[in-house]
Length: 306
Ligand SMILES: NC(=O)c1ccc[n+]([C@@H]2O[C@H](COP(=O)([O-])OP(=O)(O)OC[C@H]3O[C@@H](n4cnc5c(N)ncnc54)[C@H](O)[C@@H]3O)[C@@H](O)[C@H]2O)c1
Ligand SMILES: O=C(O)C[C@H](O)C(=O)O
Image 1 (cartoon, rainbow, N blue to C red):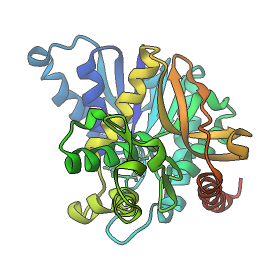
Image 2 (cartoon, protein in one colour):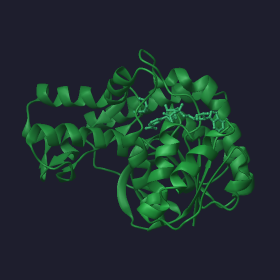
Image 3 (tube, helix red, strand yellow):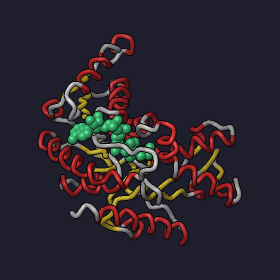
Image 4 (cartoon, rainbow, N blue to C red):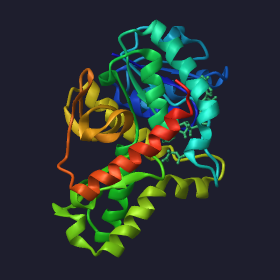
């Protein structure tokens, strides 16, 4: 098993560290800036004796080291700064994602692609169209991270473990993301039964602004610890064929009445990538919210002119 991470910045390098420490695959880390992937992987390799990993970890500015990868994660691109939306990154990041897909697919024709670069729903759509791969093999990071944030906030509020919260955040990974209180549970109780509408809305607002809250603190970039942990969790499901249900940026072909758009929905992840898109029984208001979110992503996708 071989996993390539393209982009050796905050998310990419932290992800490479998480993956090599799992010791279930060789890892290649690639960046356009010569020296950074080499230096970071050399540094990580020098922890092998104390961490105990045995797989190969390689860093390079050349795609040769990625050949024959089973999974390719794209984190290459720019991150937003305070006051910016993710959509403002599209001009620069679309060029980068297109180039990365073409170069890496040429050397790893059987790979599964996991897209992280923002705006992630449109970038996943772009990667899918550029690669011509089936949707099972091209999906993006969204709901695992957004749900992780909601779980953290609810766990803190109710004094429970975050593992006892099952969050449900779908739609765009952006200001139109949709939090579903009826499908989010804390120790088995739906969030919609635990609190009144005003309190629900406060949690929803904090979740929707979760990325911006971190950007506001960091000033020079965006979140990377929870994002890299979320991608590692997605990869774990694929590598170990766990079939775990999680929300990912996924191309829809009629599910939820939506087609030819990428938004976050629950999927079963396992070997081969997306094994099933899961359709929750949404009520009319919940469905309308998802449709509005998909419409917002369609506008971003239209800017790609593909
Ligand atoms: N989908 C999500 O939930 C999510 C979460 C966190 C970050 N992100 C996004 O992931 C991206 C990366 O975030 P980061 O914090 O790691 O940024 P970063 O600036 O720390 O790292 C980005 C890296 O990409 C590299 N790069 C740029 N162009 C490249 C190219 N053509 N080929 C290879 N490498 C290239 C840069 O040199 C840099 O090292 C951003 O777009 C960010 O918005 C998305
Ligand atoms: O907020 C960002 O721009 C990065 C990422 O999408 C996040 O949600 O942390």
